[in-house]
Figure 1 (spheres, rainbow, N blue to C red):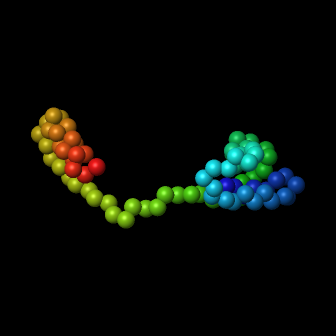
Figure 2 (cartoon, rainbow, N blue to C red; figure 1 turned 135 degrees about the vertical axis):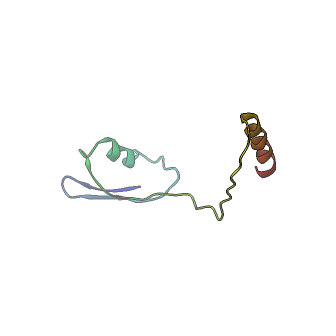
Figure 3 (spheres, helix red, strand yellow; figure 1 turned 45 degrees about the horizontal axis):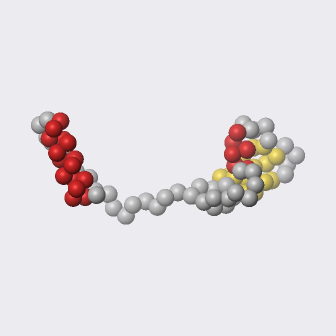
Length: 80
């Protein structure tokens, strides 16, 4: 969602994080596409994914590209 101020000072408050809203024009896209001619965006709300609880990392050294493919296939089979 967005919060914007129009040229006459009216504040448009549409700060929601709905996944989908098809009840009319998408005001966020209208304000973004107008490049400031409809109003100035003063706030936004973002729906961000949660951070993963852990991250695994491995460094590998292989001799050839064929070995890379083999390691990749094995890793996908055991970890995916």
